[in-house]
Image (cartoon, rainbow, N blue to C red; front, side, top):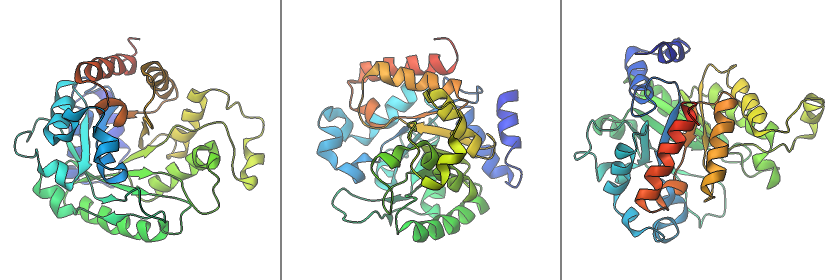
Length: 302
């Protein structure tokens, strides 16, 4: 184990050896193993957007084994997916890549911002997962029920030595569309995930917009002109960097934009990227080459 990983694990002062071992599995896995940086492949878009919108551009991606294999071949840190996707490759890929069981999901037909619990801590334990993953939507009326759910599930997971990843995506309520990506809102959402006991926090890259009228004065005079500085503020909001923070790749975008995002995450002190559609919607060879370049960026080689 490297000094970087030991320092990260030391920040989790209340956790048992099982949780720390599972965090270490993720942090020591693949091409970025030992660096303190992560690239995770999440494939939960079938729930959120449907199979055709998610996979038809690259039909090989309809097969759950495709995603396991690309995560292994690209030397990624972990693979995150809902119950059915993990079950479909659990035996074939056992021990080859740490997995994160996404235990709640929504769909694109819903008229409210809400999710259903679709997996359990028992499922994660049975499938050998290193962590559970759970999405909350700060700003929505349903977030309070979700906070209760993840409090209970996270406590259960910690008891059996499994880590918790929280996707914290502001949405709904009084938030404007622009406000969903605002700097103050993103930092607040990340802090909420930390307060809920997340070991790994997943948020979106913030813009320079400040949404909350009450927060504008606090941000006056700060330099938020670069994405790296905004990343640094989000990391600061996660207990001054004492929690692992990774940033979403978002909607499909050009490779150059992804590379710049990674440089900004690295330079702002973030721990890495969690990239789904921008990986599996590309041809396999292109995706593997892109992921290899992201790894080099996080290593400081590019």
